[in-house]
Image (cartoon, rainbow, N blue to C red; front, side):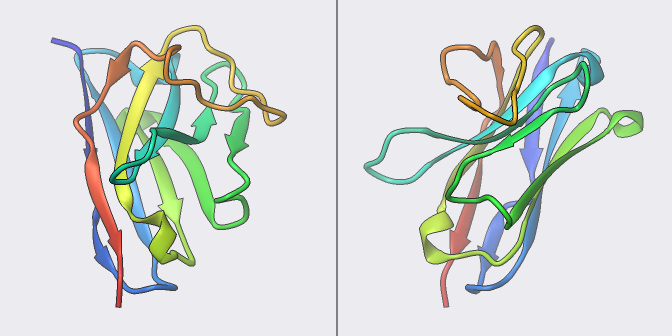
Length: 129
């Protein structure tokens, strides 16, 4: 069974950091592009960042640029989202998703909900004092 499993969410104070993990199960995530999305209560799902499988190209939404970093560890079949300088407006459920063919260009449009085939269950990130 093909699955993506997110972990690493939690409660953090403003200015703090978290690292989210997205691990593939039943398939080799290395061959797939991965996108990170988030959805806050009452808001639409937003594409935050993505990374391509072919050349490691990455994209960041303006709202997280300079604070978040996406990376891969192929040996662990995992993609990470390092989140620094967190703000209350970063509070959301974060999802990772994978797709075999989507190329994530640094120039956009970034991760698109309709493109990705496999989705994780989500992990809650809450930024609050």
